[in-house]
Image (cartoon, rainbow, N blue to C red):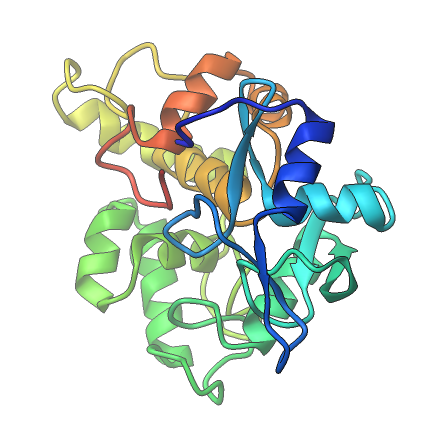
Amino acid sequence: MVKGKNYSEDEAVNRIKSNIEKVEETGCWEWQGAKTSRGYGSISVNGEVRYTHRLMQEEFNKPLTEEKPCTCHKCDNPSCVNPDHLFRGSHRDNMDDAAEKGRMNGPNYEGDDHHQAKLNSAQVQSLREDYASGEYTQKELADKYGVARTQIGHIVRGEQWQSAEGPVLSEKQRKQIENNHRSKENPDKQGENHHNSSLTEEDVIEIREKYHDQGVYQKNLADEYGVARSNIGQIVRGDSWESAGGPTG
């Protein structure tokens, strides 16, 4: 969460332009203010945390749309806000760009031959079969296969390792598995085990990734997942669902 002065959108853009360091060798304009754990600049605008590179994209380049809601970096420098280094893209464009530049944690959808792959096709197939059996939570699978919990979600949804075998379940089937696991645990536990929760652990990880990595607004996430905007704020900050994976801050 960004602390300090709260700006209007115009004030924020001026603040960004006056608080950068221009790197002659690369042409990057590196934001010198608050940053997320992944190096993306952030600033408070009208009471909401916004990414500095998204603000610069929207101010100086083409506006973001539903089809192209993401701001990507040509320079692969998260703190850069130079409009010439930014381009808009879809969520898939953003993931493809991250994979091409080696920023995807663990295995990605390029398969066995990718230089960062921690799993092979046979392991991915076994992982998917384990998940489909309903005997393992995503956290348990992450521990079993030695990869991040967020990667498990990408794999079982078929977003990564698309060429690998193994069952890719529908959203309804995945939620049923998550609900079954929740019902076996303490119903008084905060977060995914609360009996009134309308979200699954998988939903929470997706929300955090969309907010922190893709820059989707909290209001849009609230509308997409059918929860209050205040709940989205608590989730992306890590104030709720503390046991779930995904980036917070």
